[in-house]
Length: 406
Image (cartoon, rainbow, N blue to C red; front, side, top):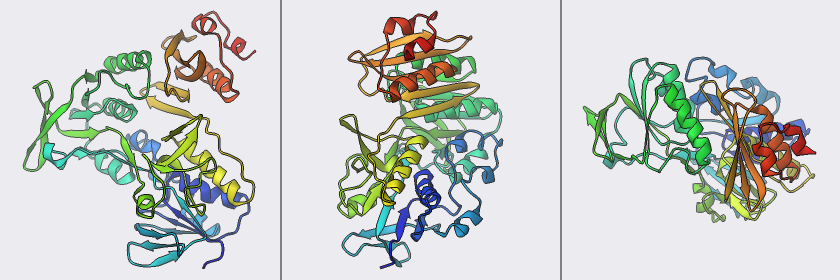
């Protein structure tokens, strides 16, 4: 066996963060990173924003220049897949039949966007998801002023796509089959603010409206029949209906899974030689098992694994934070609003700024800050330190937020 070899399956944010942190810690073990794409590891969030708008070139998205990998003795195997893990032999079998041995294995396989079934037109040309460079490059060819875009799904992916499309001059209709946009991830108050912002920018949002079928002509999407019976003409579609964790390999080799690869406080799977981190991992958090689909979690969890591998193991305690950029609006989120039972809305100090504070059984659990950096920073400090705050003080715009930290 290659002494001490670490094999990282997945060349995204978590996989790169793990390799980079190990080298920063002067760890010299052999590292092999396996990626399915034909390009070196890169940031994904800008793909659907600045890259798609032509404001950022691909070389600015890469984590490091290609030379970094050779200089730091990180072997990259691109354009290939792992077909099978043999836990007993501590080997993986590649797409081409070759076999690679490991001492430790890190699964950083990410997630895959859900797609529409072919039975309702999901296989038509002009139907897109946004996840990788190839998706973004194909989509960029469609994003031309005056064209008609249908977005399916009113979560953050759909709303961010709508903002980019309007910036580029497209006509945008967004449908959400739930009662409102952001129903799974944010409060009604946050949804109301974001809906109004999109309406101001000309996006047509239709809630409680699903897709019956896409209508094609010569294999290309040309229209959509909606659940209320209306038919609209469209030029292309973006599907933003969530993602599924890439846990196929984990399932096949008998690791514990459940809406992701189950890990402990050290990101170990049910096999102590195998770790999982990032979007594919289901981690323990405050008595629950959750998946955190965020750059921050991918990096922090990967760096925690690097510490474990180098003998400085400490339990990973996730401190969730997220962000979403739409038009000139920055939505910053601290905490995780799972199970909230009350919200408090606070106007910000400047026009258009507002924050929504989430409580569960009287304790602060999360904050949404819309163009309100002070509220975000204050809320994050409170949450990071396990503190709560008086709801009346939060609601009063005259309260200096620094008082909440006293």
